[in-house]
Length: 304
Image (cartoon, rainbow, N blue to C red):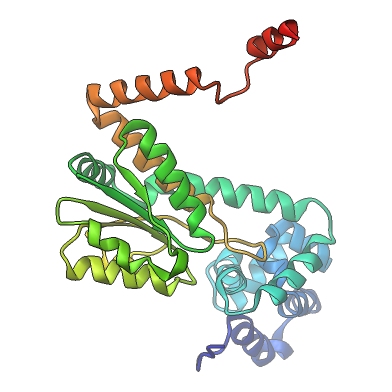
């Protein structure tokens, strides 16, 4: 496991608390002791709830933050939250922290829900509208569109490929079955585009595929969690999303949101060709009775 030479956020805060301990009032000491000893609580809960659990007032937490050199309690708690969310701890450690934090009731689940909503909403904050449009036009001009994501990101790539083919029909979901992923790039040329999905921790095969595509001048649209990610560095276009999670496993909410927003742009810019494609697909699905229908079920019962 990677170890940093820099102290963890809690260690830095604890060191500052120790340095100033003798000058703190009893109430500030009570707040400081709680903050230092309970990083999951500080990471997951609101300032009001932290104050209640520490048996101090919210104003005391603000005073503590300013005493320690922070502009606000939010500024103090943010690095703790970030370390808790993105730190190098194992899934086991994070699951244990999650269970410990959840023992207080529904507050953790509400926090998770609010975070998921914020990640979905952040898509248009992190990406310019014109970048979505540029990516959509790239896809509309492509002969073939390959989609790939590994491990958890496979779900996003699969959904993108499925929904894309409803409106276009030239999408291919790539697979690493039998170790053939890099072989499949032989079917792609500079007239095509790859849509690759990955977020931290980045899967090696996805990055290798992007590097090979770049070497062969095949355009790549990266759906990733940072403009500085190893996938973004290989891409022609990058659309980013937030992947923070207070749970034991990283979230796909942001990745799905950015994928769906890109698909919406393809549908909007695709004109009559998209409408014709959707009509054909819908007609086929109806003819094949792919989806359950109350009316069709009633007719089937009557025939029996």
